Image (cartoon, rainbow, N blue to C red; front, side):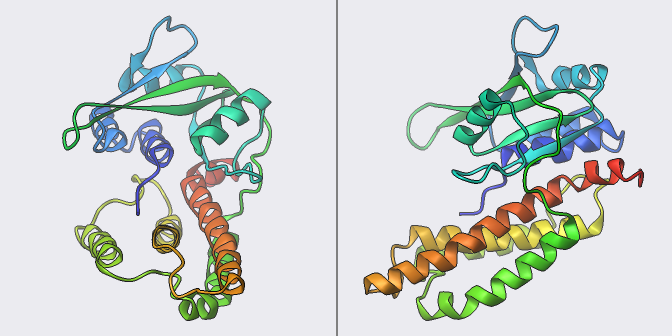
Length: 262
């Protein structure tokens, strides 16, 4: 299913706040989304967990001028730069935010409470030291866009033949929900991001949704072991490319700063 990465929301709207393009209230509202509350623990100078508004202000005072996203997976430390402790925590969470301007990173810990049907989600962002080095395997926006288009072209024939996108009411409902959300004009990224980043992220999220549906709907039309293997081989590079494209889109704000565009 399509779900916006919490690290993506924190980085995008945190960047908008750091740039002075959105208010603290609007930034926090967008970052929290449908969760109950977000807190930040381990900030230098703060002995206990604090709210997002105070945390973002503290990060600014520590020299942070931008936020990057990491979306690592086993064997693919996408967006990470070390040290091992931070990489391990980020790998377990499958996402993290890395600060630009200070050697700090944030990893989300998600807690759920309440009865079925009324579950409240709380997120605690753990602040950890990071190594100041280029993030691993992050493409430029242009590279990400080209790679995503190429991966889709190469995989389309196999995915279609093996019914990899899934079918039935669950798949259709997910696709309908995505279309409805897009038609409501949601802001994919915060103000200040280049239009190309919005375009790349939207495409990457659509691709990610289809890959997620494919994994959730069993083996599709693949019935032999060879077909199942071909199906998996077709999915893996597309999923990897979609994650790389998402990171490139979320990180576009900081990349422009580094190039002196801002």
